Image 1 (tube, rainbow, N blue to C red):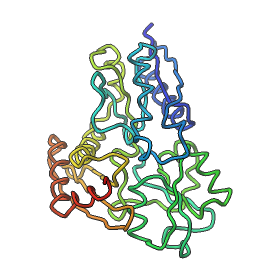
Image 2 (image 1 turned 60 degrees about the vertical axis):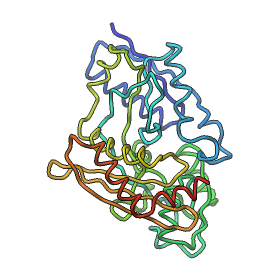
Image 3 (image 1 turned 90 degrees about the vertical axis):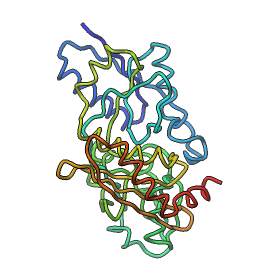
Image 4 (image 1 turned 30 degrees about the vertical axis):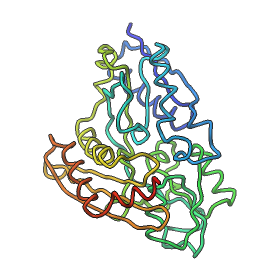
Length: 306
């Protein structure tokens, strides 16, 4: 009987995603034995500072990758939006599952949407991308850092610490909390993080047996779209330390890619859009990144990295 050990973070959402992957694998490989290896990462442990201040979303992967290198786990499940644009050497992503809802969610107990918030309302989000788009739309709002898992963030909202918070629709829906969404923030007016809503499974590069087991979960259309988004982000040197958004969809056999670079301090936003062939996702991502540079993205990003 083949066995598979899956490393995962211990947050409720991470466990849901890993259990979802495990259930899908068992359904497709009925003789497979799956064991979860829950772990705590530095990204989960340090909650008093923003991710950009402590090193970025890659902190959610490091301990899981080390477990794979120690042979304590065979693979790891991630939200693809948290996976750095370039994997550490020795790792691969053999499976990217069909994408769930890509949009952001406006969540509030008293207000129906961003435009319904009173002047000076407190909105919680630790994402510079979300902050930039909020500031572009409502420069009067107070934007306050918000860390922790989904339940922790909702608890702070319910305690009255914020008038509203912004989360990912997919995370709320996966946890059975879709009714908390008061407004979907969607393209073209609002763009998500590159690959938001997609789950990826990582394994050691060269572990062909594990890669074969996982590859049955790979969704070609989702991979095509997120590769374009991640190529844009990579070309612009993106991380959680700079406000970059991207969203690709397939239309008429081609990829339509929208990109955005913003300034979380003053709300300036630059946008670009192009389409390309499905077998040229990487080139399309670089093309839209070039259009953003022509519009002044390098100056915007450089000022925020300084």
